[in-house]
Structure formats: C-alpha cells, structure tokens
Length: 190
Image 1 (cartoon, helix red, strand yellow):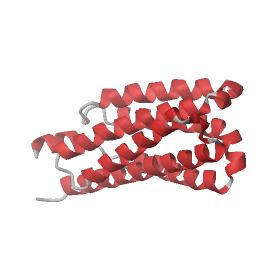
Image 2: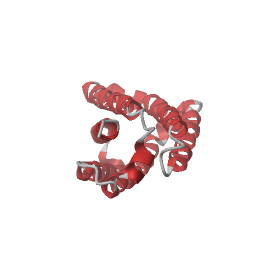
Image 3: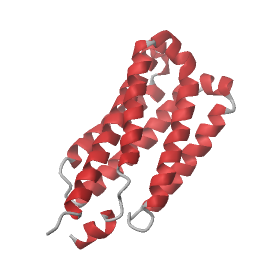
Image 4: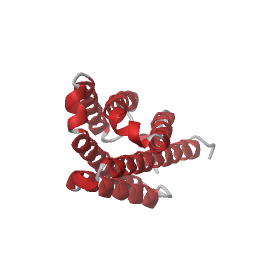
C-alpha cells in the first residue's frame, strides 16, 4: 500500500483526463451529426485535439512528476503530440491529404498507451482495470482498420473516427474516475 500511496498521493489532477475524455466524447457525437462536412473539417479538428491532448498531458506529467512513476513517458507523449498537432495546423492541405494515416497512427499510439496504463492499474490492483484494457484494445483495433483499409470511403472514415474518439473519451473518463476514487481512498482517515 505504501507504493500506491507514494505514487498516487499527489495525483490530485484527476480532472485533466476527465476534461480530455469529455472533449473526445463531444467530438465523437459532432462528427456523426455532420458526416459530409466532418471529413473536410476533421483535419483541423484533429490537429487541435492532438495539440490539446499534448497540452493536457504536459500539465499532467509536470504536476505529477514527483509522485507518478513513469511520468517521463507522459512528458514524451505530450511533447510529441504538441509537435504533431502544431505541424498539422500549419499545413492544412497536407493534413487533409494524409488525415487517415495521421488519425490511424495517433489512435494506435493512444491505444498502446491505454494498454500500458491498464496494465499499470492492474499491477496496483485498481478495480475496473479490465475495462481500460478492453477500451485500449478496441481503440488499437480501430486504428489498424483506419490505416489498413483506406479505401472504405469517407463515411466509414467518419464513423471509425467517431468510434475511436468515443472509445478514447470513455477510456479517459474511466481512468479519471479511477484516479479520483483512488485519491479518495488514500486520503480517508484510517
């Protein structure tokens, strides 16, 4: 229990993954409501989400660097996302042309990160880690479909994108609630 206390004692910023998750879920719904316009604007929206994801993860990594084992990986991921998001924003025609590859690889990256997070939560015996694992695997599967089947058409791209945003949003909200619950347990009087 001492390791868990040391790791999570200062993880008070559980709301950061929560905000990111809610934004991902809202984007998923928006993409489904406007499918024809979605692909055209998806390059810009996706660029901003990668950039914002990097910013949120940068704050999360820096705020928890003294208490979260492996915080450096969050920092590396944050810096990579900031760089990729900015590069996409400054070159919209290229971004639209290779949007599917960007999305597929980004969701693969996020899915792999989700698998690592689920495994970490399992090692700490946090209830519900299996859901995190399942959502990470589902996100990884959708990312491979995006990259390996680009000819499925714009509507399929929009549907897959919406589903991947939804899964990563649910993952982030579930992860945030787990952190909140863990913080509450750690700060209760014995």
